[in-house]
Image (cartoon, rainbow, N blue to C red; front, side, top):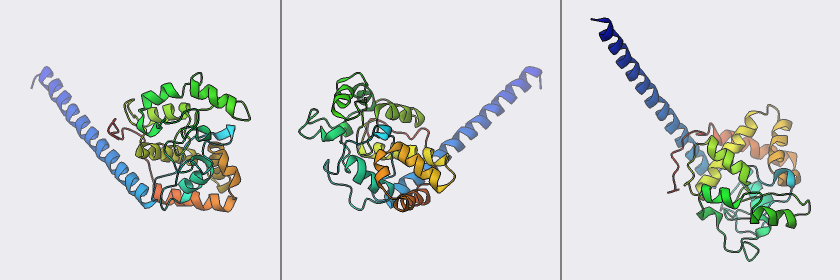
Amino acid sequence: MSVSGIAGFLQGYGDVRQDQKDRAERAASGARQDRYIEAMGAMQGGMPSSGGMGAMGGGGGTGTAGPAQPGSSGLFGLIDRTEGGGNYNTLYGNSQNGGRFDGVNVSDMTLDQLATFSDPSGAYGQWVKGANPKGVVATPMGRHQIVGTTMRNTARDMNLPGNTKFSPYIQDAMAGNLTHNRLAGASSPAAKRAAMRAEWDGFSNVSDAALDTAIAQFEGSYGQPPVRAMGATGAY
């Protein structure tokens, strides 16, 4: 075989090996996503949560934004009680329900649309700045009170396209991904509680014991998230 023939053979062999590797990686990603969805079902309403109002304090939901998901428990249940009220359309001060942003349903909007809506200099961010006691800009959205910056960073981390709808499924998926990443860097119960309280100010009103139990449930049910290429599209 000539030198050029050998080179061609090696190139073809390398392409086959790369294709096999790509297929294996896609299969592994699919398996992770299956486990992830199963965990969501087991937890009856999703997974834990994301960078809501965080350091600003006082999430949009006060428990009056809407009914929590039936059977909601664990970290999601705690967030429902202390932040978004279980409503996937919650805005700061429940302003989506008869308030300044009455009728705005973030769960029907795409990530691109919400990137504009949550611009700190936009109407929502500036209204929150004037409405909250600390006078800081924040843009909490949805059940888990995910702020715009966190939403954009998480979408990039999960490889979600801009036309992905901020549906209940996607909100829970983002929340689970964020919580997993937070807990991954904490090795002790105290560090894990601190990580969760850094994300949700509402957890400061939850006892250590209750938070420890919820974290343990999350870690036992959730496993590894499909943080890359979930295959989400605007159909979600």
